Length: 194
Image 1 (spheres, rainbow, N blue to C red):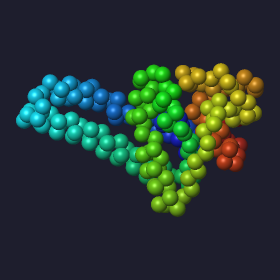
Image 2: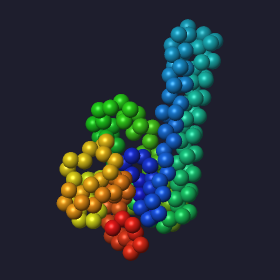
Image 3: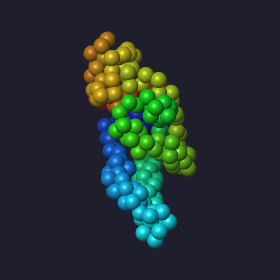
Image 4: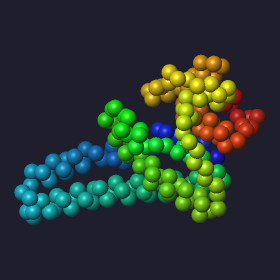
């Protein structure tokens, strides 16, 4: 069973495995900026302008292809190993607009949640497996054990600490367990989360 957290990285609450987001746009942003600066200095519609424009278009296409390839590989991996995928039904536009920091907005755009979700749903449904999108309301702030809400939790806090029962766990892992609990999943006795 896998869940896809709000920080753009999938993780399994059962085996604790996280898949890191390679952030392709962030990694190649300096090269794109350099090409855009170079393009702006060229005389419009000159031969060098067309060459630079082509190089810039190829760089953007490389980013798109890299991201799409990554999403299909993750979708194939998850759909082969698991029968159920639980997704947070995020309002990404609201997250992007409310994000005050430029870096956070860039990372949300770089994660490309809608494309990722479409690829994952396609991969699971192609294999006849179940995909459950759930509302993301308070999943990061709700305690997996007692259901208490930690209203003081901010995006910078990476560890969830329940003010009611004292339960402490990685924020994304706790959110994925809350999502699974909302689906009706009961943790096995060997689960280290409780």
